[in-house]
Amino acid sequence: MSSGAPYPSWKYYPSRNPAPSWVGGVLEAFAGAADSIDSHSRTGVSSDVVLAAVRPALMQVGFDVEASKAKADKITRPVLFGENGSVLVQYDVDGYHPKHRIVLEVEAGRGAASNADYRDLVRASLMVDVSYLVLAMMLTYKGGGHTVRSYEVARSRLDAIFASERLTLPLDGVLLVGY
Image (tube, rainbow, N blue to C red):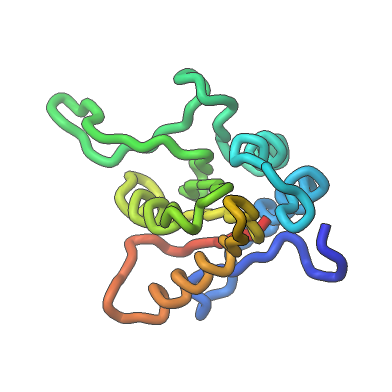
């Protein structure tokens, strides 16, 4: 873990509102897994490894969390419905908290460089019964001869989105977590 710095890093949006009470449980899940997922001290940690490390603690606070890439273990959220109530469009998510209506997405590797934060924000905005997004990004990603500070990139983007009056999201809040 990084010496002296709080772990994980986090910011709640909109920044004019205090973070909801459920945020503590999410942060504790990441803090409890720091030895195996802290991207300042570990390289090559995939989103699947991070999800497996935080899964037990997140389930303790009410999340359904993807257990594997097998179809039976995936968590999906509907977007559009068709005839007879059939689901026409749905997205796979890393986790979902049914009581608080929270979608969880964990990004690793080139998450910021590939605009995964934007994709996750738009998808969460389209899903049925979703009020919040928890977006977990690496603090530091080293690969291909360069370093990407994914959390900082996502934080700058979210700062701009929430400061601007040009885009209004249909979410009550977004929790950005840097692991």
